[in-house]
Image 1: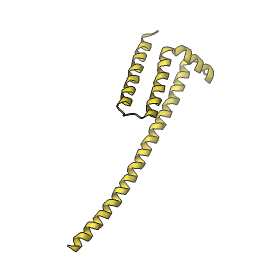
Image 2: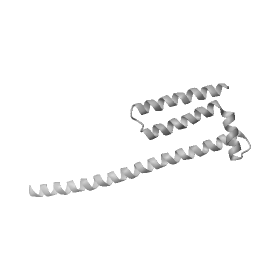
Image 3: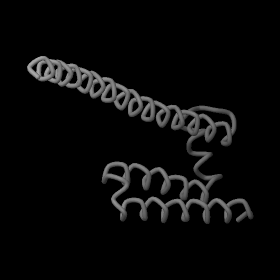
Amino acid sequence: MYAVQYIAIVVVLALMLYVMGKYGKREFEWGDFLFWEVILLGLLVIAVFPLQIAEEIKNLLGLGRGLDALFVLAIGLSYLLILKVYVAVDKTEREITELTRKIAIELEEMNRRLEKIEEKL
């Protein structure tokens, strides 16, 4: 094994413990915990057996070199993660917009009630 493999293993194990800690503190939901642990477990397997996995992916995708196959796979997974983040941000923006509208409507209603009360006084 190369030194970079040992570094990758230590980093991935540290990230796995970090994710477990976040889940233990209830900062992650079960689905998010499972998603990240599976991703990190995959990275751990790739760190331990990089050449064998690169060969298998190369043969599966029909690419010329194993490293190219790993890059193609990594880019694909990165796009999936970006899509997941985009969907979460979009959902949050929609919720904020809806809450802002509700608050504005309620505030306007409160202002009307206050004006009526002031007129009576």
